[in-house]
Length: 337
Ligand SMILES: NC(=O)c1ccc[n+]([C@@H]2O[C@H](COP(=O)([O-])OP(=O)(O)OC[C@H]3O[C@@H](n4cnc5c(N)ncnc54)[C@H](OP(=O)(O)O)[C@@H]3O)[C@@H](O)[C@H]2O)c1
Image (cartoon, rainbow, N blue to C red; front, top):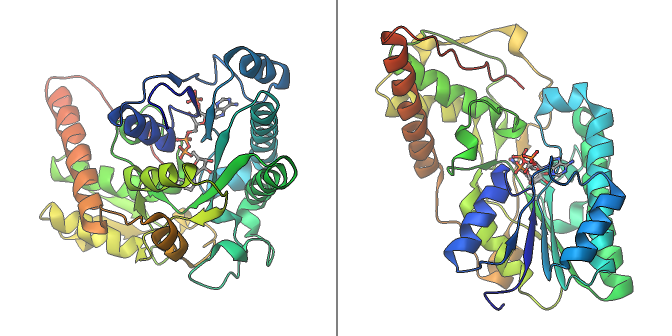
């Protein structure tokens, strides 16, 4: 694709969007269209249509969504449905109407049925009912994927969907303590933050609920590379992008504390008040199609990801400690989704 192609990244300020923008800039794409939700609320059809009519982006990457963890999903089923449906209905339709050549819709492994066979393949979507705790989010995501499929089938446009599992980033946004809203990463964020704060003497304990759920965690930077390879294919298809490995929250916790030279058993307390419904016990993606057809492989493994997160949070904890020692109160907001 030419380096001056006009590319609209919807949701550029989020975890996934930040990684996309970084990758595109590194590759020399300069003509990026970026709008925050306060500049352009994608739930408003007239505003979205006016924007697309004026700007006519050639490529659209739809990473704008209402995203959150189990707790947020359980307590906000209406906005998780409304916001996600409206955003995707407006953006996909306007992209088609105003001539976008390619569009990529970011979906989530939450779209899979609760009892999905593991590892999850592209074709398992809609083979069962979703997990009840994030039902409306899942139904919105499935609808988005079906919308993409329908527009491709009927209008021949190159519109794609990609299914990501839980993601981690290391690009600034994940470490924005003022904006702890990225639910799927909250449990592990809570651990790295607590462990690094314990390390510098800012706290002593962290209270956890269920630590046995296993997830397929990947690095956002790796995943957006797969997404970009997809977007350049001529024949649209859905792809699962995943590491193909799972690790439990317990395993993650042990490693984080170990890397800081601490014994996690001395600092982690299991407290039933922090138990959330377990959701699905294991979520493992099968990325064999992405590996085979796109030639994609993730570069950042589980250990390296933890190293990045611990390093970034340790730096933050040290700053907090310096401020506290100087007499300033700098208590970060609690991260509990
Ligand atoms: N994070 C994960 O682990 C994960 C895993 C699988 C799939 N995904 C998928 O990846 C996509 C992005 O997720 P994320 O983790 O990057 O989310 P995020 O960090 O919460 O970012 C959400 C983005 O959406 C934008 N947005 C939200 N509501 C909007 C609205 N009404 N109008 C315009 N923009 C709006 C936000 O813009 P402002 O900041 O300007 O409000 C922000 O840029 C989602 O589709 C999600 O389902 C994420």
